[in-house]
Image (tube, rainbow over all chains, first blue to last red; front, top):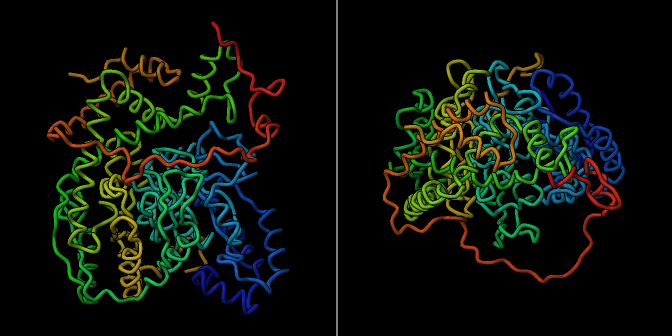
Amino acid sequence: MSLFDYTLRELQEKLHNQEIRVTDLVDESYKRIEEVDGQVKAFLTLNEEAARAQAAELDQQRGDSSAKLFGLPIGVKDNIVTKGLRTTAGSQILSNFNDPLYDATVVNKLNDAKSITIGKLNMDEFAMGSSNENSSYDAVRNPWNTDYVPGGSSGGSAAAVAAGEVPYSLGSDTGGSIRQPAAYCGVVGLKPTYGRVSRFGLVAFASSLDQIGPITRNVEDNAFLLETIAGHDNMDSTSANVEVPNYSEALTGDVKGLKIAVPKEYLSEGVSSEVKEAVQAALQKYEELGATWEEVSLPHSKYALSTYYLIASSEASANLARFDGVRYGKRAEDAETMLDMFKRSRAEGFGDEVKRRIMLGTFALSSGYYDAYYKKAQQVRTLIKNDFEKVFADYDVIIGPTTPTPAFKIGDKVDDPMTMYANDILTIPVNLAGVPGISIPCGFSSNGLPIGLQIIGNHFDESSVYRTAHAFEQATEFHKQRPSLGGARS
Amino acid sequence: MSRISKDEVKHVANLARLAITEDEADTFTKQLDDIITYAEQLNELDTEGVAPTTHVLDLKNVLRKDEPKEWLNKEDVLNNAPEHKDGQFKVPSVLE
């Protein structure tokens, strides 16, 4: 067994009792990366020298191991800025961005908690994608079957945890980019309430939708990590000034009397029968545990995809204007004029999907089309948000699948953007409404790929989401399964 | 009827400061047209009088005191630039 089969708290206890050293944990990470990352391709940049030095230093001061994440090795998605450690956001335009000058707020918090950054995790370029095939480096592989995609855009973050390269990681979620890869890789991924976690130092994709969140092997670790990274930040004016509860205290295992809503739109055609069966079995489990569930309707769900692509692409077209070859990143060679330099730097530095979304967003915001597309989408966003508010007036949580199907094969959907986008149909509404959502393992397909259960809560009610997720996890064994990648371990 | 013409695609690419080839213009015309056509399903909904959501939380203007503080070092910032000269970013000629 791997050291990373223990929970974060168990590892801390072992450190505290001097059964293991921080150096052992860091060794475990790099050893496993060496064994399997040639296949998985989860890491873009390793922080090995600094991580080992930090481990040795922490081992010296073991008397004081009280910091929240003391000595625990983490992987960080590559759109989260790390001082002095290359940050590419999966894009060629930042391939030479070797020396970022500051840490994202979440990274500051990790450092204060004395976790150890093992490296930066692969992703779809600028977080635009659902399969990791849009990484401009190497497509990440699903550890359960390397012919399949790990999901995206936080594919590296989910695959690294599933493959046992790190016990936990950070991802980001704009339309499903934490929950969808967590579902495909059989791990636990939470998108917090919009505003719960500071976005300062997150390379912006769609500012009204983006959130950073934890990816872990179990719910307890997830709650533990969110406690560390959540909270108001003066550097992010959209971060919410509300108290961060002790999420670990929500993990009571008790869901008696919990009222669950199941949107009929989330189990409609398009959702595979295997996924439906797994979700129905989960609902049955919740009944056994004393919760009740009823079917509800989120009537505007079918408009979420259109709404999302108009809003997210519009915001992206503005956010990505900063990549212009002037202050950092790559510049095209030998341009004669500044305009030519802008255009060629961006043409050479961005991949097709990023260009497509910049184009769509620029079009939707352009004179004569703004009201018809962008404003219309924002109005429909209000209707989608209202759907959720109505349901949460009567229910504690919403439950459905995370994705319509398990992971698909690499190459299967690359040629058709619309088919690729449809993967996110069950996760996108959550971002549009700004509410929190988690994906936890709830079964396996006939070909051995994980299936994810999505649990959605009201604004700032991550506690109910965690309580619901944890109770299911306690009553099932799905989260204990590990991919057989790399041979020896099971 | 197509929603976006190849000329419009080229115009949008110029607005977005993206150099595109003729082939790319053809591909984008087709793909953007598909996406926009799909997105026009939103027109089924009557949104008369519905307030647009720009932000999900009920935040008003968030203000802080305008006080100078230490931030990045100028030399470090310039070192990340493709080209710099005399303490400033250097770019190719602005006037054509």
